[in-house]
Length: 241
Image (tube, rainbow, N blue to C red):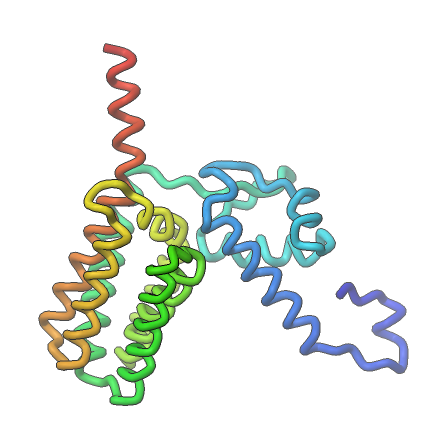
């Protein structure tokens, strides 16, 4: 909903909740559209096409792009619109190592602070995620997966850790999603088995064990995420040899 100057000066109240709801919905749909690989790495954001797809005007689209830029998912180009942020192999190495360390710490702290009610919430999300896995519903599987990681992070009770994690998470959200499609060791199934181990350690409040599981969970995700890059590099080397 676009609010005109006339509306602002009229006697009719502006529905702030409706404005917020539209913004959040636009942001969520645009984020999912990019994270799920509908625009390639480094690809330009075509505003007209996205406005038609989402059924919105350019103003809410541009507001959403600013948020995604702050999350590291897109880059804003001065006077040239925006494009999807592309990550190099070095970027992925560094970001996944750092995120692995943060998740390992969050797991240890969560085991010290988590309540039975919070464990029950994570168990419910895990069962939902498993159902999505069986149905090959990647979109909802990924949503449940990310919710589990966020709840473990919240249970750490460490706000500095949470804000640092949030700053970096957006930059690799896209590759975390695509890594589940990796062929090596059937990554999606492997990730599901790792989540069984995560839940088991969390139930037992086994902090050191959960910390190690989460670190290697991110390492395995990194390996899978880098598989397409390495294949492209091998193909290029073969072509020039």
